[in-house]
Amino acid sequence: MKPFIYITRKLPETLIQPLQDRYEVEMWDQDDVQVPREVLLEKAGKASALLTMLSDRIDGELLDQGEHLKVVANLAVGFDNIDVAYAKEKGVAVCNTPDVLTETTADLAFGLMMATARRIVEGDRYIREGEWKSWSPLLLAGADIHHKTLGIVGMGSIGEAVARRAKGFSMDVLYHNRNRRPEAEEALGAAFRSLDELLKESDFVVVLAPLTEETKGLFQKEQFDMMKDSAIFINAARGPIVDEDALVEAIREGMIAGAGLDVFTQEPISMDHPLLSLDRVVVLPHIGSSSVDTRYDMVRLCTDNIQAVLEGKEPRTAL
Ligand code: GLV
Ligand code: GLV
Image (cartoon, rainbow, N blue to C red):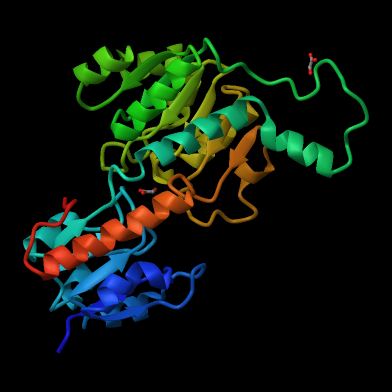
């Protein structure tokens, strides 16, 4: 019997062809609705490999169910949805998609920063809502990006790619990271700061850290309070790094000027969330790595990793 592979979201057929040629492959048939938990648990019971989304919870219950499971390939660089330690204990390889999405995600983080600073989305709404009566000197006047100070929290490869973009805009780049990154300091002229120092000095604070026990709830009222009242906060990492109630309060009370968010504690964010009532907040539906080329590369990396593990070889990117 061919090994069974379950894919938790509808993906382009051409990309999964290499797996279909060798294995029994089944795919959840919708691209905008998550696979229900019961279905995922049932499929995990038969599967040798799972190709999962960041919205699927791969926890102890699921791993215990996966008697034949050899590999979980997650279509994301982040893997906070997976109990990696337990998977390893059970001999299940866990693969993510680093590197292929670095530049694309940095583009989005930088774009979100620009959109928030220069009020690009508000401008679009303004025209479509028929508000535009005349050119006016301070119409939608925003904040400059060039020559300002960017503080990057989480200096992994995406952080470095954002720093490279910032250099092109003549920005001063500060960073905070668990470990100092001397190569990045040298190559990019980025200066290390404690988190508190970075928050006090930066005009833009961009979060690109993974969600871990250390980063969960890292941004509270106290952190926003330390930031300049003109500062703009960008989160392109994971929602739970930020206390969203504190963020709403910080913007309402003028502790900071605005925020650009690609991620939320609850995804999708509920339509009555107070963040959505604030003009100086730009929101995106977790699309950091979503260019066609990069998403295709990510799927190919997942299918290559699955195939490698099932053939007893080293996957390209394992945790
Ligand atoms: C997206 O958020 C990812 O982790 O790849
Ligand atoms: C703006 O469009 C200007 O001409 O200053």
